[in-house]
Length: 299
Image (cartoon, rainbow, N blue to C red; front, side, top):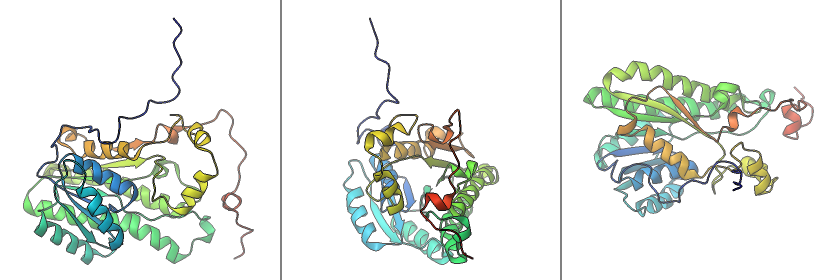
């Protein structure tokens, strides 16, 4: 009997399926930055499905309001509250933790998802452009992590942190020097704080997403995807498919769960092996300026 050769990695279980036992996060408070849109909201939804009380934080109040209603309607969800916060400001970060603690309790889990990014040749990055990305992606992540850690250390309670990273923290990111440098710092925080805070019961891990198309993608990413038909987009992945946002949520809920208590200081890549893809013969080098359609550099 002839067997059909599989074409890529199988599709995931359907939306609504749970990767962990029902109620895994019942009575737990989970704070997700950038939780009002995109992958942050998808991650928050999977925590909600497992019974978590949620705090979603973002700079945009209108997005938070819609996301709060959507997440509150997830079957199994606990209480859901939203907080407007600029994570670049340590005072606002403290305010968010104060509000979360007053409404729901000290967050047991922190998901540092908020970040900023845009493509640019390195030589075109202004000081403000550099700061805009690094201050949100790295410094903002640090402010949130620091506040979470200090409160748990003072209370003598355990906690779990998940930092959303990027694979170019290892490889470098031509066209994204600002973001790649910031994400490398985020990855290093995972490895450093796992050792420093492990003795106090605080675990910290990283989670790197691959290509997960969703409605809130930035214009530059969407433009790039729109250049190729879905079939061609899939063919560019070793898995021969892109990811479903819920798959990232399942990974996040595992890393922060009681079932992963001995996993800390680790960064998990969820991208169907795309970041490890290599060709037998490298293609010709196309400078980043040309790839982005920029003319010759003029100082």
